[in-house]
Length: 382
Length: 246
Image (cartoon, rainbow over all chains, first blue to last red; front, side):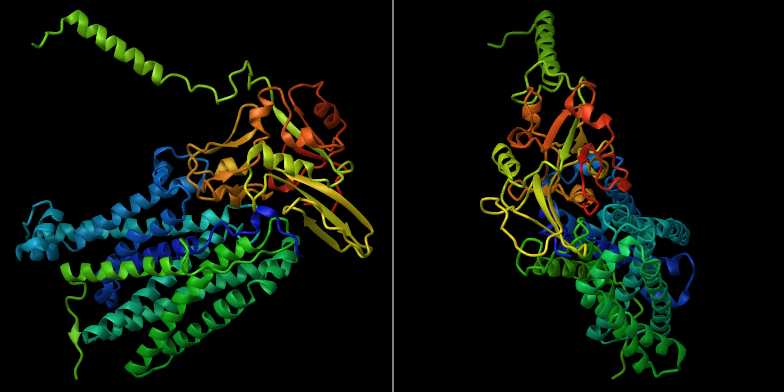
């Protein structure tokens, strides 16, 4: 097992293409949390409903940036929408992404209209911007609020299948590559949807705790417990699906297992078996099980849930890495593997990835300055 | 001192302008160097490789690089050397660096042979299917090409090709691949790799012409395709291919 086709020595899709499904997943996951409140009426999630919607929005803003950086001809990026080739799975991305973006923007507009009006009335440059966002209409009454609420609910309802479509579609981009046995599975898009929800809930928990800690707020305990339980449930489904997929291939002992087994053993033992499953799946599973099944003191439960959420953020990142990079380590000669280690300062390197991943949090901070995302947050008692 | 434009003059100007616009927007001119009477609907090109004739000299690789200015580190064609020992253990290598000469090897070899590889110009080319902007396409004469005015360099075709024959050109950051030397075949010449092969292991011909050498060879049916299970319907036909080759 040592022969790699000569054009496969260098991996084509690297860190940016790992980051792209990761950020898209955060968008879809955060949106679904907000919909749990807006559509399904999960009252416990009310404290993070706006925060989750705003998080989906800011991640959405940066979801395409890694793609743009990756493209060899970024100035032609819009050709994907202007001159699409509809036999390509990738050609739909521009339309799906644009439609979903429009929906999220509209939902934010209707959900937060009252807050935008209040901010517009305070005047100043920000107030002027808010007035522009509101299209100059600052009128508000019980009737308008009720109408806004109704529309937002419908948008949130429509948004759930769209969020699944957006991220399921990203999974399909990989799952439809028949030349690559590591990618080519119809389960890929289902796995991507569930892992997206896991990462979305995890990033909300992680960020909610950090924001509360920085501002000296008390976290809403029922909300955190509820998020923890949802995270537990969705991570079980996500991990189970992935394990079932690989176990089914392994059990059948088909020809492709001969190479996939070696891929796992020789190239992905650390990132896939040890880190993704044994450390970053098993430990959060146990932690969340403890927090969900036992009566723990709030402080301890919070520490456990936050740790599990943070670990699951890494778990999903590792999953993306193992899918995107792992699939390219296996040569289509089926006779060997190549190697890849990301650079720090290169165009598609780790430093750029870190900056891209940090930017949404900065925008979210600005967003919160304009429209408070936690209007009912209570101060922590000394 | 402004002169008023009469109606007739205005119509003349507009007519001339529209004429120029029509000329500008008219049919796409032929590619440079292909202004011949070449009719791309009259041909459907195919390729065959007789692995029993290949001696691994790599003249094809050198010719391809020179003809198509292929940069170092990527390949439009290459030759694989297979060495299989008595225990059916397979070792494969290529000579794609320096002077493209295979290193001599010693040891237990039950059988050994060379297998040239090239884009299969598949009838159902998956690279064309997945290209999001239609930059990868099959010409009417059956050659899978990349339109460098359109390619966005996403690399999806590179991932989708089951044969590993595509690459991202490090100079242009766009996808590239074998064109069957399109600039040559449309002038009645053979691809550089075929023309340079000293043993005739590489064959090129018109599948629409029943009298072509390629059609004659293929009619016997003694050929194999690479990875037929992919459903890509390759047009690169292998004669005398060992069972170990994928």
